[in-house]
Length: 402
Ligand code: PMP
Image 1 (cartoon, protein in one colour):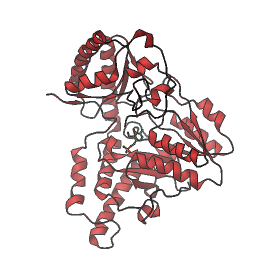
Image 2 (spheres, helix red, strand yellow):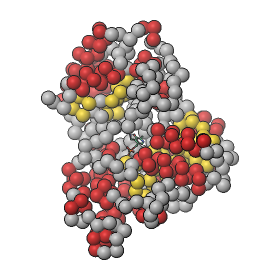
Image 3 (cartoon, rainbow, N blue to C red):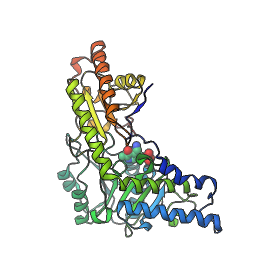
Image 4 (cartoon, rainbow, N blue to C red):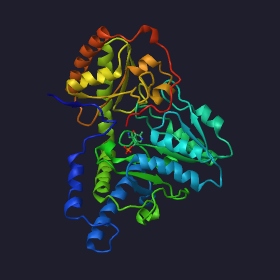
């Protein structure tokens, strides 16, 4: 069966260039980078190269990059570490309602520990409300954390405007750029970003490795304790092959950013067009232009996203839903809820995320299958019209896509 992978926002296949670069660090150059002997020096040299590549990719200095196990840890650490290191200055944090759970959960934990957190609303297209940001900043605000681009609906935030506000008010600005690296140009020094999370597996690198950039003068306390690695800031034997792969993945992603995003944008818009031309009552979530080049989040009226996912899977096409929730069928994603998407549409939401190797033929096949699947589902079990337009208050325990 033809297998088509349209879930690149969840994870990407590793590129062979990356794998080739990593291989020696599993087999022959396997030293511990903390060791003083030749094996250790060899590993350390590889770390230096990777750190340089990543720093170059986001426009910072190499000693501002700390390796972590991925963006979840980077986000947890940034919020926790910056909050506690700056507690003498204040205890108020501002973030948004559409952040990844690795931001939201650590914020909730800090609320239990005496910090105050404001969760900003977004508009219908998923843009953080700048007027609210300005409104909620006070003398106690120490940290603003807003994601660069949303993993579910693809909206790219007005990051520069937010960074400018933070800078003007003297507040530390963190951004979760996990989905944005390789898709939009980010230069943290130029933009005035103080802290940034990233992850290798979203850019054709290995899983389980990421980084946190922290600007030199930004106070942050460590999160993982028990060793002197990463300048005493992140303990644990360093994942040398992973870091080598990560460095290569960032180098490739930033090298190819213009050609890749142009190609993906064209395919993305072609796909959106074709779906809307061939299926009625399908709505695009997020902003039509200021969105990730590979993200297509569509809501199909009167069908369940999960049914579409299953039937697409049965013909070899992998996608994600935008409404998966552990706590009951009537809840939906916190992102779609924050965007005030009606419940029936949230339940009919599917995320298609294109990758480097996606072709027009893949998308044509997907559209053809979608047409049949949506027609069949609408015929079989249309969601009760009484539900159309209803919203639930929802709870924040909904499971959220990777
Ligand atoms: N933030 C965002 C926006 C993400 O999409 C993800 C990955 N799903 C993460 C953070 C967590 O990244 P990781 O898988 O590297 O822990």
